[in-house]
Image (cartoon, rainbow, N blue to C red; front, side, top):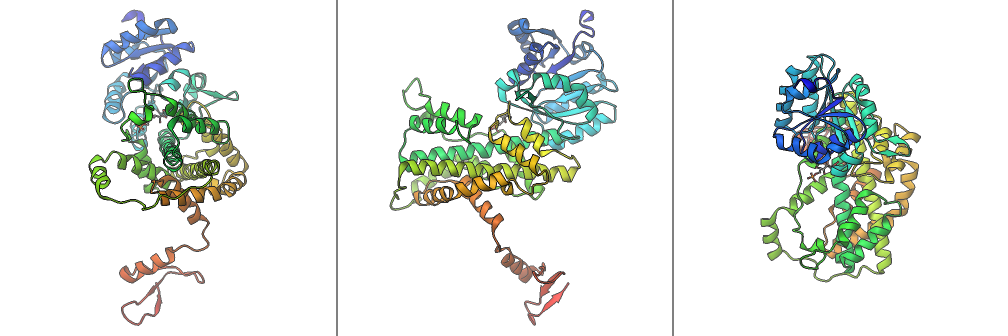
Amino acid sequence: MAEQQQSADVAVTGLATMGRNLARNLARNGYRVAVHNRSRERTDALVAEFGHEGTFVPAASLEELVAALERPRKVIVMVQAGGPTDAVIDQLRPLLDDGDVVVDAGNAHYQDTRRREDQLRADGIHFLGTGVSGGEEGALLGPSIMPGGSGHAYEALRPMFDRIAAEVDGTPCCAHVGPDGAGHFVKMLHNGIEYADMQLIAESYDLLRLGLGMEPAAVAEVFGRWNSGDLESFLVEITAEVLAHVDDTTGRPFVDIVLDQAGQKGTGRWTVISALELGVPVSGMAEAVFARGLSGDARRREAARASLSGPSAVPDVGDQDRFVDDIRDALYASKLVAYAQGFDTIRAASEEYGWDVDLGAMATIWRGGCIIRARFLDRIRDAYDRRPELPTLLVDEYFRAAVADAQAGWRRVVAAAAQLGVPAPGFSSALAYYDGLRAERLPAALIQGQRDLFGAHTYRRVDREGTFHVDWSGTRTEQQR
Ligand code: 6PG
């Protein structure tokens, strides 16, 4: 439409909840936003309901959307990851020119982002694979934004991103993560950490309930208290809220009327697969994905519930207050392990793909807006400020001391969970990781021996350089390979 020509600063296509709220956030911050959705109703509904919040330019087609933009054009795509994103990009491509920028703000797989960035670059179009976290509310009021792609494209979008992002201590929760897929990789890791954190919180709740017989409302109070200490975080805060909620139809605790099968859209699984491909052990995130999978396996759970036995006597966990404190310590230490594994994975990908990701900056932009926002992230940022090449967060001076203080309680909780027969895969695998890392000697030496015996896979010695093999089936003498 002629009257719409070149009247918008930015475009958003895909107006489901996240896209709509992002468009509103931009408009409320003074940007003129061209908006488009595959089915026209959503576009009209947005303009009818929120038109007063700023300047929206409705577009009936992608052609119209692009025509409404000032150059260089900036188009934010907020559609379902995978095929639908490719379809929109394919349609946009011939409509755009050299220097225009396409932002994919969905939860894309980083390998797709790498491919798309590469393809669009051939046409001179900049592609910013951008992680956006904060859910519905974050998108509207200030998300954490993780853009990946060319520095040039980032600079073009930077003022806009900084303006709409959450802010902590005057710093916007947005930073250029690195080239091509770096932004979406970091967003994926954010989600993996989110899974681990949620699982650990859920285990804490379960142990408080089953170990101490506490009611959800009482557990809510415990989380409320924890939220004013080192565990202060959005996830702990909302846990207290969910546990305090009462179902209005039955009057029962809300948590008791919800089917105990956790859903997942897949980003946690992607994280674990990607980390394994990079060779990083991410036991915290893996256990969280496994636990969701187990919870949803209704058929096996039913069969097992009817036939498998638990401990014959229920042990006494001892002093109630001490057990509550122990669980808090287990949560803190296990959470640190999960974050350490998450940051290790980002470092591994950064080295693999040459992204040069600044880990401290990632902790900084996760301090606000996103789902894992927490006081804890200030500590992580400080740790990387102190030592950018930190081999693992666990050896940072602050965290090392914190875990030293927490470990007695952590161990008691893992032991109690095993004795109670309450599953605590997050707590126990985190402790196993901690003990594995700090072990003087690991039984991996035995595994090397086994591998050499059955497959001549060779081994290295502690006292000499080189690769060796024992002639197991013959003379049993050692040969250098
Ligand atoms: C965010 C969230 C968001 C989301 C995921 C998790 O950062 O805003 O991580 O991306 O809630 O979709 O969803 P699942 O638990 O369904 O995998």
